Image 1 (tube, rainbow, N blue to C red):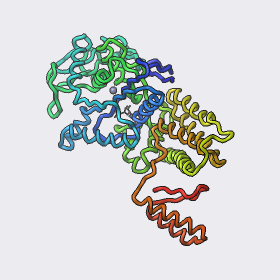
Image 2: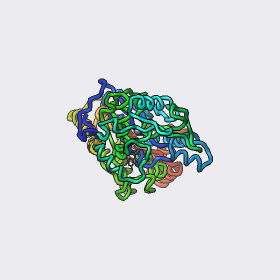
Image 3: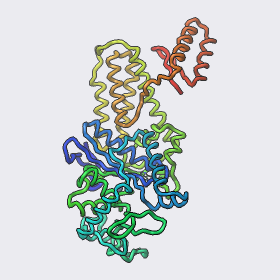
Image 4: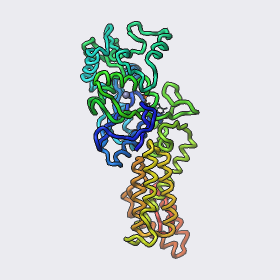
Length: 467
Ligand code: AMP
Ligand code: ZN
């Protein structure tokens, strides 16, 4: 498995720290609003990375934080005359609704800043004691000059950064270097506060991820991921904090997803050009959003458009129809052994194609192509009438590969209370058709349509599904 590592700007063979195990940290959202589909991209991308790792047999520990202390949350709480907790609890819940809808598995832990305060203070304290941070009137800064490798992820040179930053007028006089960043900020009226050795206050943003990764995964982790806008300064600062504190490399592989754009501009809350997952989910099923996000390799930008969503919806429908037809075929097919000319290797070739795509830095676009080709193969084969044994192998592979992508292409048959009635009506319609009583047959079809049931006549009999 080869992954593109932002740290080296190269695709590298993935070798975990500990055999068979993957320790993975993905930066999570600041919870003050619904997530937009740009925010959903790291969710779906790295959930798919996790699923593929699990498919390959790795045991994955997956950590994703919630930033529940932040200016934006405080402002929203003030606007609504309520507390920060009310806002963050509300949007954590909404975030899970969207993540569940997108089939994003829950992380092993979802730590929250407010619940990790002691550990955050502990790490800042260690940085101060180790000479990597200093305090000025209640603010604690990280001393970037104390970490000579600062800039190694974003490939920025510290002296250039300092020179660049020095030209700006709004430099914080208290900082030793213009590149230094805040670890702890003092209390201001109207803001939440926690006691600390530097007075009451709250943590800066970057420190939380260093603390949570260390606490739940250890000093060195395998994969650290997030959107590419996090490379600088957030991830650069995380590296500085963690490596200065722990004295060992922080993350072995840094993975960053590209942007979801609108008219080729990054979708963002501040630019106002965003669509929330919730709004899109009112127009398209959640799984179409997931499928859309997987239709490009994760590092390439994807331009959001209704046309692309529609084409993804059609593509997903094609896969689902194949699974449904195949499932129906199996229920009615015969032949527990493979027939002459039915080779398992013909099916397995699509698994190889899928794995080759995923092994090449999780190329989900090519992996989806492999799924489409499997679908084409199945559709052609079944017309020719394959054995039940062969059809079962086809379906098993189709379900396995789509599951790695987090797609459920075959819903378990719903056993509604009206199932018996539906089947009875279908039987009556079949009889009516046999008796050439088409008026009755059509009336029954209409009756079923009124119940939200669509029927389809196939060579193997009548298939039905709920709309
Ligand atoms: P934020 O709430 O802005 O901190 O973003 C949460 C996550 O979404 C981070 O990993 C960001 O890098 C990512 N992200 C934000 N906007 C986009 C976008 N337009 N496309 C892809 N990822 C994004
Ligand atoms: Zn982070």
